[in-house]
Length: 64
Image (tube, rainbow, N blue to C red):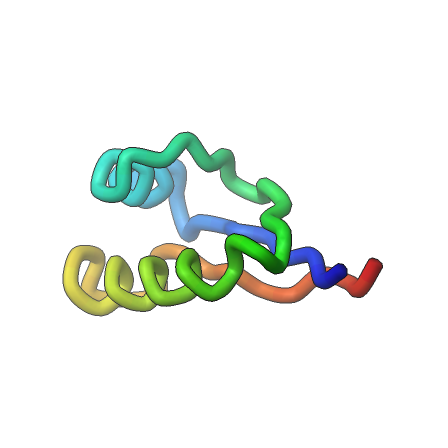
């Protein structure tokens, strides 16, 4: 299984992201590969249309 981590440039961006999508992610939280594809699209949409920059990142950590 692949493991990913979601991180934020600032705490306020993570709060905005959580409010925008009604999530409760914490900065540095691990995400499973089954959630990755949809979350990746949401991160890209948020960064481009809400934050207008690289506010949220989701990146691969390791294979399990």
